[in-house]
Length: 367
Ligand code: IPM
Ligand code: MG
Image (cartoon, rainbow, N blue to C red; front, side):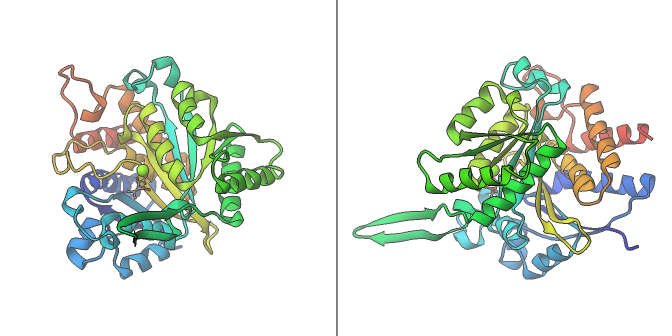
């Protein structure tokens, strides 16, 4: 059997630095666990624009369609702020999501015990937190037409459209119910059915899909109330399913519950390929962090945990994913901290590669 294939797109800002640590971890699995991947690397975002004049070259897009999984670092940076909207770094990522049809974006927010003190919320609110936001990723206001900036009378009007078909809602709802079945069997759907027709339809379709999952306890919340409940008592949730824009906002909020945006991985999954595995792209929830890029300060854990999700969802290696997540938990429990995980108390933070060293050491100690 051919080795599973992995396309790595480090991207911009801290993307290349955190991805370098993941490359070492991938090599470790090859050398120590007999898990060898065919790894290829390519450009996305500003890096692709600098070389090709487009944030995603067609050849890269084609490669992404062929591999078993894509692992992406981050895109964007101030250098590209003035670029035309159509070639902004973010367009590369959005094209990948859209053309690979990655409609189900899993964003876990898990609070590691060792970091419970670090959250801006009280420890008892976040300790032991383990929730997943399922964000619809290929439709809604991110892609809806009409869109644009038009002239109307003597002024300009900015337009974006929230649009969801029943089938788009149904497939993401189904993936959220499936996930809830494998977890705590609780699903909360968030929309704004009080002000948006798309929200009314969302609620109806999710309710319809729930009939196929009688074991899952379904609830509905307006997304604004959901944001409030996420900060008030996040442990009331197990799985949350929501649209593209609300999911973007709620997942950043959920990320901060865990102490740092530098900790959170994500998996974007599409329909099954011929091998039965879903089309998939894995990426940290954090952005390119241009303010610290190139300084070796970035926390590689979100990207490392994104690879763990790839092991679990694309490569059927749940036990090895557990091993990698366990290694991260171990080093955090031992006190390993990058700068984002430290207060102002004068403790010397680990560099990106030192954190990588520690995770590799914990992996080696695990076998
Ligand atoms: C995310 C990011 C992206 C989004 C940007 C980079 C396009 O914020 O993945 O959450 O808005 O979806
Ligand atoms: Mg976001």
